[in-house]
Image: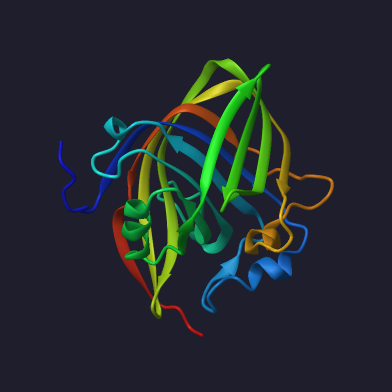
Amino acid sequence: MSEGPLVSPQLVIHSRMLYTSWIPADPKACARLLPATLRPAKNNAIYMNQYVVDTPEQTTGFGAYSLTYLGLDLDGHVAPDGVTPGRFFTHYLNSSERVRGYARERGVPASSGETTLEIENDVLTATTTVDGVPVIRSRARVGKEIGMVARGHLFYLTRLGNRILGGRYPYIGDLVTPFEVLSIEMLASDHPVYALRPASPLQVVPGACFYSPSDSFVYPGGEVDLGPAGH
């Protein structure tokens, strides 16, 4: 199938995905990354998604790619379930210029990066590199059984010009059991993601971390204009 124009929404199926969330070492530095009209969640939580789409046949138009994106949970914005916090993109490291262009049109701060997920002796290592230099490494102990199927919508916010946009992202994912986050490291102190580094000792957010060997989602859907971003 030839590459046509990318239209919204785009469907991605069966991605391999490690999703984590933690309390940062420097909440004030993290908060400074938000537009003036947005506030961090009361627990100051950071979220991160590291995932790989192995083949073009898993997407409606993106092609194969890998991605690490992260940012802040928000106060005052929630997903359609009324519980899961809305989340603001601060960093988005994608291996595909085709996907980066699509994301930038929606206010996502997309730049180049590569993500790999490897499992050895039941330990998953997710590594994010920029220009060949590792900047993030996450490790988790993962099982082989599917403990549950998660489904719903996430609500991600971006800044496009002086407007805040929101997008609802429906997903269905097989979550493995057992599962335990072992470490999350920001490896390059000179890279902007270092501002979001975890506190020591690591404090993960309960219920907000998982590994899925098969996570499918729409990217994005239900886009809405939420008003001015402020200065």
